[in-house]
Amino acid sequence: MKNSSDPESKKSSSVFKYSVLIIALLVIIGAINPESFGAVAGAISNWVGDYFGWYYMIITSITLFFCIFLVFSPIGKLKLGKPHHEPEFSTRSWLTMLFSAGMGIGVIFYGTSEPIAHFVAPATASPETEEALHESIRATIFHWGAHAWGMYGAVALALAYSQFRKGEPGLLSKTLRPILGDKVDGPIGVFIDVLTVFATVIGVAVSLGVGTTQINGGLNQLFGLPINLTAQGAIIAGVTVLFLISAWSGLSKGIKYLSNLNMILAGILLITVLILGPTMLILNMLPTATGEYLNTFLAKTLDAAPTNTHKNEWLQSWTIYYWAWWLSWSPFVGIFIARVSRGRTVREFVIALISVPTTIGIIWFTVFGVTGVEIAKEVPSIVELGPETQLFAILNELPLSLPLSIIAIILIFSFFITSADSATFVIGMQTSNGSLRPSSKLKIIWGVSLSSIAYVLLLSGGETGLEALQSAAIIAALPFSFVIIMMMISFYKDANEERKYLGLTITPNKHRMKEYLSKEQKEYQAQKDAGIDESEL
Image 1 (cartoon, rainbow, N blue to C red):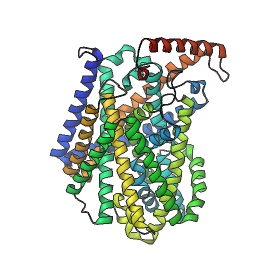
Image 2: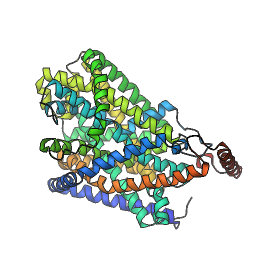
Image 3: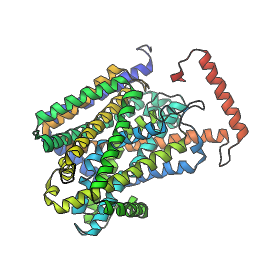
Image 4: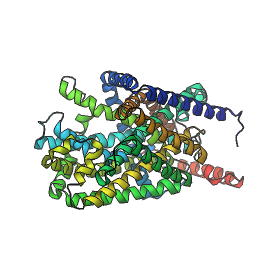
């Protein structure tokens, strides 16, 4: 155990104290005067969107193209870990954990509501037309597709390489050592790690609040449970107990099993809605939506609509909001997927991270988007409902509506628990000097804090509180985006130097690689003989 006078222990303590202080201060202000808090946060958020929207589009594009570049670069052959490291999780469990942590409740919450919103108020097409239907599906897929995973990947690659290959603690600040040197061990490092914790807490608290309102909406549709703060408080309390049990059981059990359960339930719901919904229209829309997504990919990626006022406003409300939102989520998701990806090569990691969730997203949003729009055309009152109840109203129009709604609620619960469990692990890791096994006590402290923050926001202003925190997430994304840029530069600098040392090209220098692996194996064996725990090697 490290002595409390150890510089790293002091830094870890500082990160914990400053993070708690900042978050507690924001929550107290929001609880005391939610209207003013929401107004100020909203004004700053709007200012960021107006003046930095172009920047968000560029940084989002850079992170994605950087990851794609690595696939074709010799750097892609490097392993996220030592040569003797093997993947800790099976490929199936690994992929399900990536998707559950990266999207989670969002795909349920926005699966029908976003396509309906775009169908009614599209960016360029005439509202409620065939063209609007095509645009609504394409736009939703675009927002939930490869760009989000490019941002997550840029963070995760830098952290996994730094931690598992270079032996640094699992802190984002440590990934910047190649360009900042020992400054990452001082106040600059503390600032970066506090910003990481802040962005994580903000993002997850909003997600928990959104999940709570949707569970409340579903229970209201099914059993008449009133939609109020008492019911939402009971929901948060119940889910908190469940995800703390999962957090206590450990990463390899809790999150792994829940992630597999998520994919099974999501698969059942997806296939059933495909069969019971407008099946032929969905099947015909799948290749069409995929083709339109790919065909317009570059143009939409860099389109800021500088001369089209209506489209520019639409971009501010949707695309730029999403890019900022994914940026604010990137530390949380990036840290988590880095943790579960030890032993994978850079190339394997990037290909799986971008292609698999994007493909799942295309299928999911096409099935639920087309079904939602078609039913909303027949039942116009659904358009007027809030997004938290639209899914259940649509399921209510299908055969087997009750079992489908029950599965949807269980799935939301499961995603809720997985996200909260992942978040407590990530925050615990960041406030314990990057430990791969943060103490259960620390995870419980952060778990209770996350749930308390989510409920205080609901208590202090309902939707106003949530919108204020969403605005805070957009604001937090701006300074963190500069950290991501530095992380990409640091990772490339370090990985490229190692690539040169190993002689990695399209055809690697086998002799030098053999020498390197032999040296690594000898060091590994010496450490084992010295009695160092296997998990620390």
